[in-house]
Each structure stands twice: as C-alpha cells, then as structure tokens.
Length: 81
Image: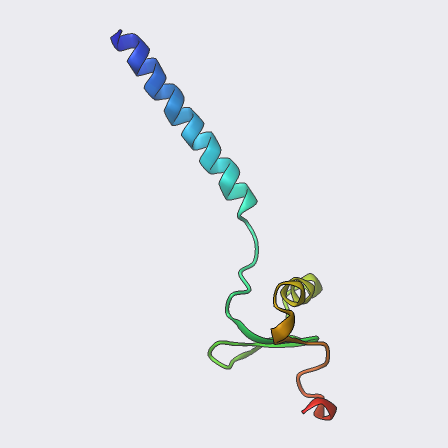
C-alpha cells in the first residue's frame, strides 16, 4: 500500500511539472500593459515616457486589444491634435 501511495505521489508531481511547463510556454509574450496611448510610431507609457514599438506586430496587437487608446498616426503629427 505504501508503494502505491509513493508511486501515485510521484506521478502527480510529474504531471504537475509537465502542466506547469506547458503553461509557461504558452504564457511567453510581450506585456503591453504599461501602454497609456499608442500611436503608429510608438507609445507613451503610464509614466509618460516615449517608446518605439519593439516590433511592428506589437502596435497591431495593442490596436486590436485597445482600439480606444490607439491612434493610427504618428505621435508628433500636428494635424491630429
């Protein structure tokens, strides 16, 4: 009986590690949570620091998730103020 409990404990531990590893692999990505306002050429963060998008796809992901905070023009375009 002790051997069965020991083997079951090991099996649960292995499944837990495998599940945690799979979740970690899926969770890898870029956190765009610090973006206050997004523009085509970059974004202002929550501390009002300017950043260029690290990858063009980041702008598109932010736009898709936060359309109300994204402006499809350059941040210094005077025609949109």
